[in-house]
Structure formats: structure tokens, C-alpha cells
Length: 385
Image 1 (cartoon, rainbow, N blue to C red):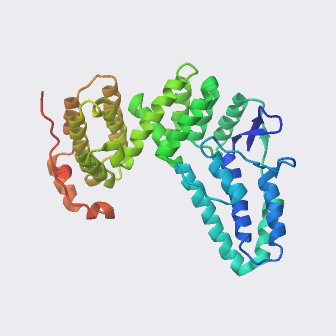
Image 2: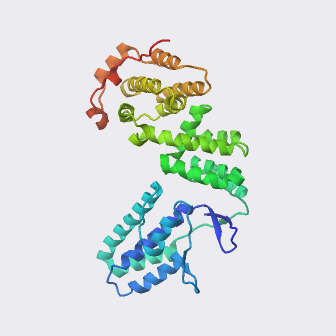
Image 3: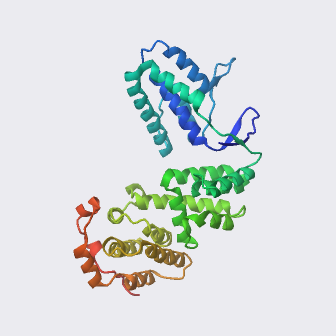
């Protein structure tokens, strides 16, 4: 875990490893709260000792203070579990994840307690207190911390592109750090913790240039600086909301049953590359010319189905096509008709499509059960100006 100094001399700031520590404390809270319901003789003593690990108590006011404070959005929710064993009302998707982890741990601990009782508790505490090892790295600045992150990544340790990007953006945000943290939190809430790297890459190749995942961090580092980081994070945050609703369409966001139905149809194809172009199409047309957005979406479903699902052509080539069109569209270098013409020219010939369709075995159960709608089989068309 990587730490740096906190403004409060009695505290330390965690730069990397907060999730691991939070999970460990949730585990101990789950053990404590399960012991409260048990008949084990030593349970009250173990509960008291676990609480000493989870929080401190002011000897004068008797207020309980957790030893780990999470970010602004999760802090109170996490503290109520750690201190009181109470799951509060959930406001963010991260609250749902914390709740699910806590309840999962309680269920597993309860199962083992019923079978092994006191011996199980002793074994758990022996591992946590005496056998669990954690490497503590103390750095004197966020800059040095980022050097460590990059070094760890260069040595092949498990540090994702999203981790590197986040830490770099936070490092250069300076007076905008609180805004940066809030924006990043919103991005995670929208696209999901495990999908951040994919979203970052899709946004980048939709807006700037085609890059491999391994090159993404360097490209962002080369192009985003102290002067434009605030604007960059705001754009990321806005496009994350769109990206989330392309993947999982909601009526609250779209307010259009036809578009929602089309996106559900698109998602049965399980092709992520198409979102690269749809991000750009949304920004360009959705608010002012929704019918154009809808027509382009219909044609993209058709092209994606023909190219990837049936004919099985190279997905990297499809991604290259979508990236090129997206970047040109954002730069106002092409019009809707140009997109359709490109898709028409590159679409597999009718004879190849029919032959591949006859030979195709659909292993995607959701797609196999999907009614074959006109959208999938229609020609790629768009009215000429």
C-alpha cells in the first residue's frame, strides 16, 4: 500500500490500496456482527477486540471514529457498517457494492460458524492478525507516488490503465482536486469499476486517435496537462453517462422507446466497438437532430450484424473504421451521409452475407431467441441530400 502525509498529523493519506484495506475492515465488521448472534462463550471478548481494530473512541466525548475514512460519497455509508453494523439507504452504485460485499461475507462466516464454531474464529483471527502481510510504502508527495505507480506497472505488477490515469489526473489537478475526485467517482458510478479502462480507451479513440490499451496511459499523459485537465475530466464525466446508457439503456435517460429498443437489439450482438462511433454521433446529433441519431443507430446495428455477427470479419478492422469516422465527425469533416456511404461500401457483399448466414450457428442464446427484426436485415440506407 502507498501512503503519503495528511494535513492532520495524526492521519495518513492512502494513495493506493484503499480498496484492499476497506475490504479487510468489512470482513472484520462482518465477523463481529455475526458473533453478536452466536452463542460462543468468548464472542463478547472477540467483539470488543475487533471494535478496537475498526475504530477509536474519544475518552471524553465517547464518540467513535473509524480508522479508515473513505471518499466523501462513501464515507458515512461505510462508517455506519463499520461502527454500528447498520446498512443505510443507498445513494450510489458504490453503496450497493459495499452492501453486497458485507452481506456476502456475513453469510459465508455464518455458514462456517455453524459448523466449526470457536475453532473457525480462532483460525480467522490468527490469519488476519499474525499471517497477513502488507507492504507499506511511504512517499513524500503525490508526484513520487505516481512514479511508484508507473514503476510497478513497468515491472508487470497488477496496476490497471485506469489506476495510472486516475493517479496522473489527480496529481495534475492541484486546486481542482476535489472536482477531479467527484468527476472520477461519477465515471465509476456510471460505467462500473471494471469497465473504466475500456471506457477510457473507447472515449480516446472516438475523440483523438486509435491506440492500443497498452499505449493509452502514455497518450493521455502526453496530451492532458494542468491547463486542460479540468475540461478533460468534465468531458470524460459527461461521456461516461452516455456510454453507460448505450450499454444499459434506461428510459430515464433516453425517453424514447424506439431508441431504447434499438439499443437493446444492438447489445444482443455483444459488440463493444460500435460505442466508439455512437459516442460521437450522440454528441453531434442527439439533442438537435434526434431522427438522424436514430437513423444512424439503425444502420450501425445492421452493419455490425453483417460484419461481425454473421460474416465474422476482423473486429480490429471494424474498430478502426468506427474510430476514423468518429474522429472526423467530431471535427466536422463528414456528414451523416458520408458515414452511411462508408458503411455501405465496406459492408460484406450480399452474396457473402447470405452464404455466411446459411452456415452460421448462433451460440449467443439471447441473440438466437431475439426476433429477427427489420433493423438487422434492412439495407444500409440514408436519404441523400
